[in-house]
Length: 335
Image (tube, rainbow, N blue to C red; front, side):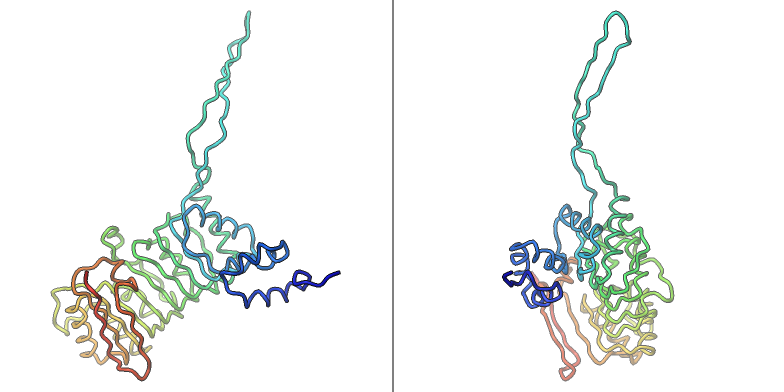
């Protein structure tokens, strides 16, 4: 028998494939059935942002194949919708009563598009996929989901990062996030002009997210989460102007920062928003002796949308080392 790569043990082939760039794994897997069996799980390590119908098929496959689901490390979720298909035409039979003659009228009426899957059924499929994704580390939610998508009590111990885009947060998602006690990074936002309710996240328990170290949120999220975690890297966006100008009149979220800083000192704080508001926050923190050693400022010169405010292309990328100036100011471009 002629020796080749497909005759090697599975463990050896997996080790060889681990050195191949991700974009070359798919062409290699299509060369033979043996390589496809070994390489296909690696193709599911990162599921990018796809169309709703395509991501639904991926989730169905992850729910049906625990081996592939266990290889998933990161998944990006668009808006999930139930599957819709046209049913096959069904004949309607109209039979007359028996008598001197018997006639049968068969009339075929095609039914319109009807959903063959409900949100409840899609939610159960998503729950099965989550149960199988035992090595998932990063979850990115790009769009607002139906409440039944998050109607489960699945806890993923390997999950470390959750990023929620603006207009994608709901109380159902928030309740699901509160059960993921292994999170170290959370990006959330509760300020959205299109969906003003809820104005702040629902109250969380005193033991929620105890391992959280990096928090990216708005003032409402700081007020809700900071004291329950060990955050050392804090980013606050959506900072708008207000009439309060006295450092003695401290907003609730700033009081939480001062209290948290005494228990778990902040190493870096990033403030993004209007200049007047940022200056007021720095004034309060300095007045309370709670300014972290590293400060980053992203100042908007005029009203920007939430998406423009947090997108990397709308602000200058900046880096800061332990030996650089601890105060860094970046101004977001206008126009």
